[in-house]
Length: 205
Image (tube, rainbow, N blue to C red):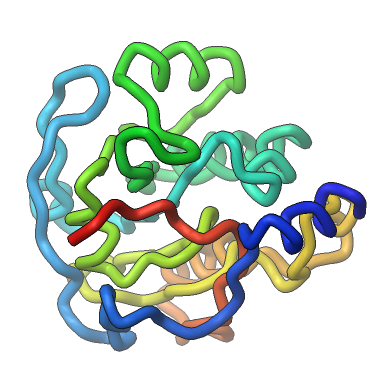
């Protein structure tokens, strides 16, 4: 809990609401399109993953709330299970150059290897174009696109607004729940929730 308190004092914590720089998306609307290169130089565009469920995970490796899940190995477990089930997992880092969490492609590759990252593609978004397009506000902030290309879920990764890894055990994981329900073609129990975590370190617009 000490890290959580320090994060609050440092002004890193953000819960709920959307800043003026990024408009909130509505559940059911067509997910915004983008086409970029990932850290390995591969082209990534959600529109190219026809009839696939797509998860967008906003990431800042220095954020205590991100460390909560990666340090416990839970984000990697979720990524592995999703990808094995045919889900596309895109991790996006929207930290501006020189700000907390900013990485070069080489640094991102190294960190991902050390942490055992298991997603489909890791994308650097230093100008914040994708982040603002989706209204991403925190790390982690999760978005899920359904097979029809529409936004099915947005919000927190789970139900416990905490940086304490122990809370993962008793939390409802909204992402795994949503993926399972989408795969079963069921209505989502929780289509949106209040995002929590470190504020994304956007640059000036």
